[in-house]
Length: 349
Image 1 (cartoon, rainbow, N blue to C red):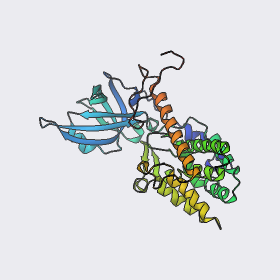
Image 2: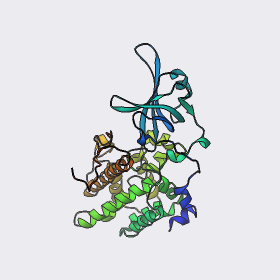
Image 3: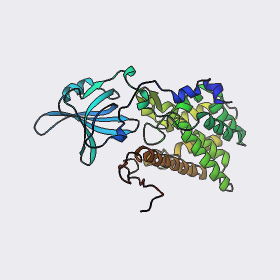
Image 4: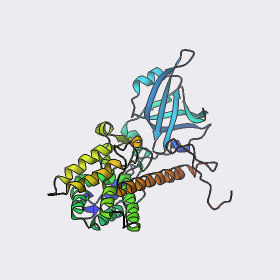
């Protein structure tokens, strides 16, 4: 089945839509010390604090699709603390400074921050879209399913990724994260396919010790719980309440169990192996896995998942910062715990 048969003829509209707003406001990633700016961002945290002299100030964390920045309101702290909620999209005005080796926005005392309604800002500031062709990626995913030899696993995957049109509609637009990696519309499909193709390559290279059908099935299923963990809104990617409480690994197991119940005589140990891959794909308990990988296929899936996510983080940092950086290094990335070298590979040290 083609994705057009599921989504209809408006595939391109869903992944390339623009709302026509003339939006030339700077993005967070382009901000530099000394700039006087006015731009649209989303509030993701706020904290009212008291200085040593007893005056109140408001600490804010602001974000768009390119990054986050700390902001400080020294002048209208209590007023803005009362009117702002986390998740609110605002227009901010102020000066970019450096404080404690980090960029900071000092809000203007007059009209430093104002709340925006949906029609007043471009939602594309907060939700990026995959640069890859969504229909081609879906076709490749379906080809992988067709290549499996195990009839039970093939039936399970077809039931989920082809026959359940509601699931597919959600899956192909879903991001793979709020931030960190593949945090954009279509990111979950892109990441899932990439991990599955890495696993396919490794399975063919190591056919004597890897069950290809189990590995590819686990790769395609490992993040399906994210379809319930994340939601897209006009102000960006957000976690659902159920996603925050339960998490995508547990919800992925629930989904696998639900679909398997529709397949008569599905082998119980085969189901256990697939569940193990979903449960252990984060690799370590301190990284969120309820159990560590205990089969070859589970270890390979974890490594492929980790590799694809790390490559995506490097790629996204380089594409975001290379053009705007005045030196060879990115800003420090707290998720990777390092800066990224971005010197032109054609140049000598």
